[in-house]
Amino acid sequence: MHNFSELDILKIAISMEEDGEKFYRKMYEDAQTDTEKQQIFLALANEEKNHAVFFNNIYQEMLQKTNHKEYELFDNDTIEMIKSLVSGLVLPEEDHLNKKQDFKELINNMVEQEYRSIKFYSSLLENTKNDNVTIFLHHVIREEEQHVIKLKEMLYYNKTSVSIEEHIYFVENILNGMQDWVRVIDLEDNIIYANETMKEELGYYLVGRKCFDVIGRKAPCDDCVSRQAAKIRGSVQKEEKINGKIFSVMSSPLKNLNGEIQAVIEVLRDVTQSKLMEEQIKAQNKRFSDDLKIARKMQCGLLPKEMSTDKITFTYTYKPCEAIGGDFFDVFEIDRTHIGVYIADVSGHGVPASMLTMFLRQTIRKDIISPAQVLEHLYKKYNESDFGTEIYITMFYAVIDIQNKKIKYANAGHNTLPILFNNEDMKHLNASGFPISNWVEEADYKEYEMNFNNRDRLLLLTDGITDICSPSGQRYDMRYIEENIMNNKDKNIEEIKNIVIKDTYNFIYGEKLENNKIYDDITLLLLELYE
Image (cartoon, rainbow, N blue to C red; front, top):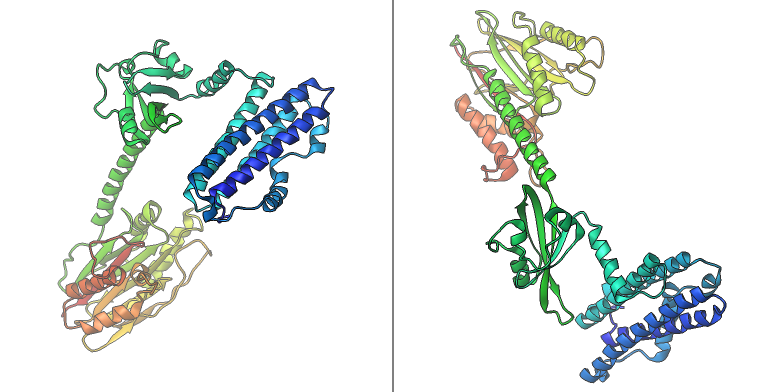
């Protein structure tokens, strides 16, 4: 179809419309005893004839303007073949129309045939590359659409002949049925039409008045959209406040048959309620955002501060992906010789996860020096609460004996294993255990012990770091962290922490560190034991 010329399309259209006229005239002759059907078929035949004449006039005009020998037109045999393929789509079956049908059924069948005709010409339009063909097909489709309107008018008035006044009344009823205000404004700002909905609201004396006068203005608006629409020959939209209500105003140019702009049609939709709802949602979101800021401040305020002992020091990075997060950690003194430390990751993010971190902080036993017993107590208390099966906590818990230089630890499903390192060596604190959850009634935790000598360092982190990915999909796994540790083991813990965090951001964003969008909570805690 993309090789059809404008003359080819016109020949097909003329031939189809002529066949349509012949078809309906035959139906007219066959319906001799049914006057109502005769009227319908005669009206349809005349419409098809008018369409054929319209397309033939364009065809003759094109023949005069164009040297048609520049391209090969379809011959009559080809035209007949095309018609035979599509006539079943465009014209109804004769036997179907001869069946006994009332006026409404017959007209509705005709409308369906027009829909099929529009679909056929639209398919030609979609497959053509020629600008002139596109213009002519738009003419064809517009004519068929007008045919649909005339058939619908027959149904509306229940008769085959519709006057100009009745046609205008039909169109006005469509506009008056709209809840939106509709008005037409000429190029001198005069209202030349307003629908009933607008008149009921602003009064029935609208036509003949200036468009700005009816909304309480003495002069045209500085940002008059009707003038803008006429100037740019396109649609323009703005919001306007009228009688205490907010309207969305859409202005579009109204052109005559020569394409000249004669007026502007405006549709005004009352958006007061939606704007009010929008403002309420914004206010609610602001309150929620303010509450989250307070919650974040409170959550950050619970993070560990400096300790009274000078035997141990620590530094950390805490970056929740939302305002508040599900990662949590703490470093605290159990007694004069024991330091407790843990890092936890609650499933999910945001408010639900952060609430569980509060439960964790309030429930954890800070007077027990056995990590396994602490986790077992936490598991028991968790199961006494009704948190559901969807959420859980993974946690690594350790107790550092700063006098005997030992570290005891246990693991509740925390899969990002801590790293114990110094200037000579590096090892993972391997341990396994069941997450804090209510999946089973009881959970036993195994306790491990290792040396923790002076200048040893302990790195704890969550999977928010090890699960990040580069743009190519590569994961930032533990080997990157291990390389950063060993390559910078001579640096202090603050420097090592910053190197690791910067490397993770470089991994995701290259050198564009100002892009701080992350998709999981990132938490890193680094401790060092002194003499």
